[in-house]
Image (cartoon, rainbow, N blue to C red; front, side, top):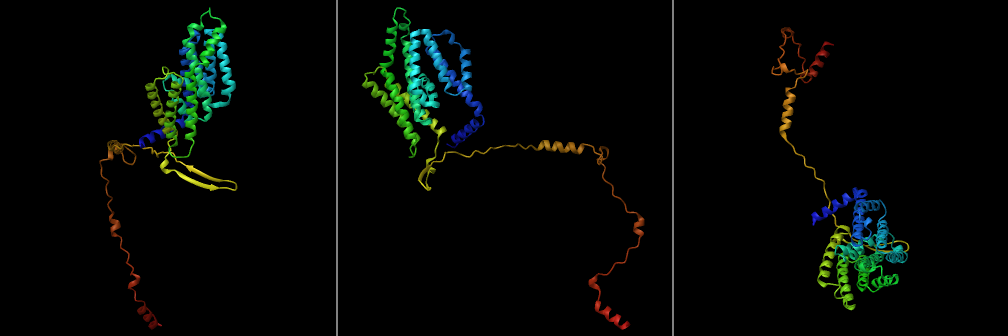
Length: 372
């Protein structure tokens, strides 16, 4: 567990240090995958099926707000629909305008969930999106999630009915009727919309509660609720063929496990050290539960190798080097001692003065008195 906490701390430090570079790259990758998915599932306009065009659009989205890729995706969808037929493009334009006027304008920054929704179906992890949105975003993310489900199923419907819709012998009213029925009477789509919205609201509601392990309980509850709604809706609407139980369970379990990993990196609260605080001011009493984040102190270790051989070689080089004080040609000679001159030995030594403690001051005083 300590190793995982250290890894989490290092990832957070790296992201905090290089956030201005990592965030545009992540937006670029998300936009690139989303636009490639649109071209792969529609692809009616051959000119848009160009990798360089998709790369340019993804680069533009990397420097714009996150919701910009949703609007650029709308443009791609409309162009592909126009290649399929002007009636399909008109119907798709009305559908997009209804979403933007009545729903998407209220969600604001949460509209990036609209982009993630079809990708969750594409990677066979649809339950991961409502659980992850309930954990990381607000309850308003249910709006773009529901709209994303509608767009995903309608694009699939156009792909399955494209041979009929391009028939020139079919009248415009008949085409509009087919698309309206495919949108309104698509019960599998509406069950998925209900499941996404309900799971997001349920996970967000439980996650924001103050009891212990609220995040993990919300993840498990969201996974169970998703499976329950999909199965009950499919049996209630006699849609047994559209929902396979075993793949649904496997995909939901995988989504729950990934959501637990997301909870570890995004939240990771240590409930064993939780504290309940109470304080008041002039108008209110406050009851607060503080849950510290699970973290570990990482110390930067520096290892310095010490090798004694280079030091010895350096000392030898210094000893062998010649200086003015120690020339090379005299380095082996021993310093000679100076002999004392004989004249210095012949000098008479000065009489040693007696020490002050050897003088008898009383005797001296008596002798001086007698002389007087």
